[in-house]
Length: 518
Ligand SMILES: NC(=O)c1ccc[n+]([C@@H]2O[C@H](COP(=O)([O-])OP(=O)(O)OC[C@H]3O[C@@H](n4cnc5c(N)ncnc54)[C@H](OP(=O)(O)O)[C@@H]3O)[C@@H](O)[C@H]2O)c1
Image (cartoon, rainbow, N blue to C red):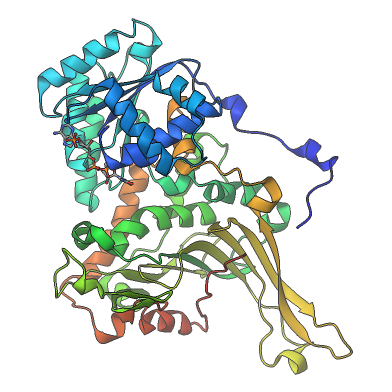
């Protein structure tokens, strides 16, 4: 699509930078020798520093069990950056200046003395904001969250009231069902206010996921159509080409429902379907998301049998590569009933969406990796073009491509050039890369920056987590004691079990393959 002309650029407004309130602070990473730190956290912080987005002064203290010095930790992170940095080659000057702010604190999370040592290290930064403004990033197992939060509170590093600010960032999974999520949230909020807890879903840091709100609420042409009067149904697809690989052990406990639906997919659904918030403040946006999640119609076991399809892949071929069946993966039980695929029809009982089916599907070992939301509009009365199009004119659709090649496509009908009156669906594509250039910050850059700034809009609130678990638990209850049937298996490299197609066919719908725009 063509760019705006320069006069139109005057309408460009940046809602981001001016509301940032970046005070000097120290980021304490628990799990500093782990994969997440090397792969995501340090590359993101380095990138923010390089782009002059970090606070005027900051420190990063890495905490883990292995023996390391400041110098050896920095050297390891520098090596990892070659592999994981978003921009290559690594800018040595920027890295050296950034690395001066990194130091390592060796200790065991279960050892009281280690927290005293950490406190002493922080006190070396003086009595000002570098000691008082603390972002604790818990890049550790969720089973360790409670202990760490209690210990940092006991050591006086985490206060509910007092000088400066202290925040805790945690990674999913936030429990494995409603009861465990409750327990975790109770543990965290014994020592911190809910406002101090930042739950990360990296999906929400993606540019295009954020753009959903911008797209919906700043464009009157689409805003007017966004309801049951115009929308026929909605499809949300998150397909993964990869199988479980090394993560068989984890996946046996999780499955596609817990791994993808409870968090990423329900978050996307909430953003697509929620009412306009009263402002862009964190609580206003999150209030609307919770309201939406609460208006999803509750599922009885009979509804689960009718509306939810699970699947598991057997061996097959993905893009020319042979893949084993899920049950043959390492650390997977040979008779496992864990779902590698799930598709569902959800109904939203509110004024805007009453009667509109929302179809969600996600799976492993599917033909391609893509995430997209397709809004399918109601067809026009087919009274004029029936002779050309048969029974049905193709209905219009808007597709929000979340990845890859983020952008938006509009599908509508056009006349086939020539003397006859042929009608054919055509597409108009908008792509972020071609419009704005290739600058797309990594999700962790955005999320770390927001956590440092204290803006919780892109983080998940306690009631969001718990409401999402309620939905997922009701589905699991419907599956309880029911082994997978033949119709629920699919070959690796296909789009899932037949039962998923039948689910849509009941209402005359069909899945649309995600679009890959070259
Ligand atoms: N890796 C990812 O891409 C990713 C993505 C999303 C979410 N997550 C989540 O992020 C968290 C961390 O994942 P990860 O992949 O980085 O795990 P990991 O590679 O296993 O790292 C775990 C870290 O925890 C430290 N640790 C464990 N027990 C400790 C103890 N008793 N005392 C001190 N340190 C201890 C380890 O230190 P030592 O090795 O020095 O003992 C290591 O630094 C998990 O909750 C995971 O679910 C990870």
